[in-house]
Structure formats: structure tokens, C-alpha cells
Amino acid sequence: QVQLVESGGGLVQAGGSLRLSCAASGIIRSINTMGWFRQAPGKQRELVATITRAGNTNYADSVKGRFTISTDNAKSTVYLQMNSLEPEESADYYCYAEFVLAGTTRGSWGQGTHVTVSS
Image: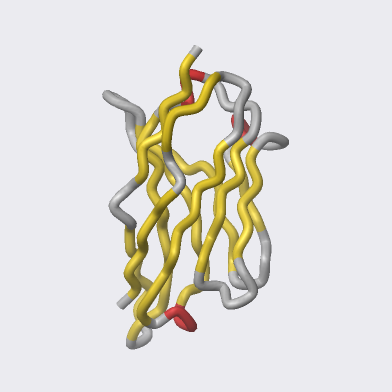
């Protein structure tokens, strides 16, 4: 299995920056893709960005050019650098990992880290 622990959330003013981190443990070599999702109160969880083991990235249109997803060399920690944050981006941010176990693709979620962007 894969366990994920996020950190780095907090309070920031509009236009400011935050860097989220997500540390993976367990069967790290089985991870194919890691990513970040967010969920604001009363809204559905939405994709923010993903990165594959090969380094291919994908971003939601709303964050392109402002957010950057990356991993460390060991592919065990994924980061989300968020710049020019907007108040409507206040949400719980969740780390996600897709991995293969016994030939089956599975997913694992972190517990979430809260981001508040003040206007």
C-alpha cells in the first residue's frame, strides 16, 4: 500500500505563494502518478495537477502558469508550488497517488491540508 502525508497549507494573502508537500511511504516504486486535488466547501473535489513517474505533467486550466508540480529524485515526495493565489482557491488540498499492486491499479489519498487565501 501507499500512505501519503501532506504539509504546507496555511493562510496567505491574495497574490501570495504557498508550497505544498506530500510525502509518500510504503511501496513507492509501485507509484505511477501523483497529483493534487482540491475541494472547497460545498463543491466537488477537482483536479489541480498531476505528474507521472516519467515526469509528464498535467494542470487544470485555471492554474496553468501559476502552479508547478514536481517531485524529488526518489519520486517519494510531490510538491505543489502555488503562486498568485486567489481567494476562490481557498480549499482543502489533497495529495493523490496511483499505484499498481498485484496487477491492479489503485489509488491512495492523503488526509488533506487546508489553504486559506485572504482578500
